[in-house]
Length: 408
Image (cartoon, rainbow, N blue to C red; front, top):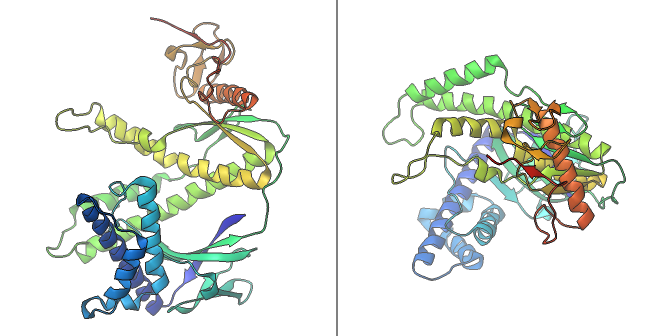
């Protein structure tokens, strides 16, 4: 089974500068190739990976593009492969540009024959990469598998290397442990049908004040004409914000991984809502002809959803389920927060707040998120009983437990 191993690199000053240059070269190749693909599409033509790879090889021989030859050739080819895959999956016009300031530099070495790793001592390891030479990294865990590729990226001012390894572990057989429903919320990150609430403070009050102060300083700092990033003070402020956000992201990732591991170890079937997070967190600004409503409130809700890391948790959950034999069942999220789990009555008035659910029909009271998790579990069990992959896909799908809707 393919899995990832991420380690903190200890670049020398020269290696850090060179890594920045390689990242810039890969970004330039990505943006140029994307613009070329779009221009071909405008003319009704097509250009693919093979032709663009040949053109990059020719461009290296030109004196004006000699800087391309300084980067490892496999990283540039892999950038074109990633672009080709993205265009085929999402469409040429939906693939995003890579920004110098907003996109962290990242590049991949796809050939395992050019990647050599050895352990130096208890705390340090060493990897040899083309044109980088030996690079030390913190040995925080064993590789436990054959290396397939390696990716170098920068996050919060630090450089990391991620190895894709084949650990040789086959998927475990389905577990016969008890099922559970999981509800994702804003007030509480994860609530289960067993009544457990999982949450963690990702940002302290002091960090919130510091982040706000740094953002104000960034908005007031001078922009230097002719420089894309701005003044040195502006660049320093942006770096401080990046380090603080990286610390917050690390906590969010750690919380998502630990919570996912607990769930798959204790339960054989996990029912979750089939959420379209990208659509849910889209802006409500609208257009000039049709401006949006309650834009500020929607923006606050979007920030709250993204701060809880729903997408990261669902990815960690699916990854951990493969190792522990758990089954992930996705159900339709419609009305799960408004259904009374006791009498199946549906009314938006039953949810009095983010934490309190009191049914207007039978007066059943429960934690709002736990009640929703129980409804998700019931829908998930109904789905698995019919062999469907998601709620609403079967033509024979029956209403959940004889749900009664309240009419005005």
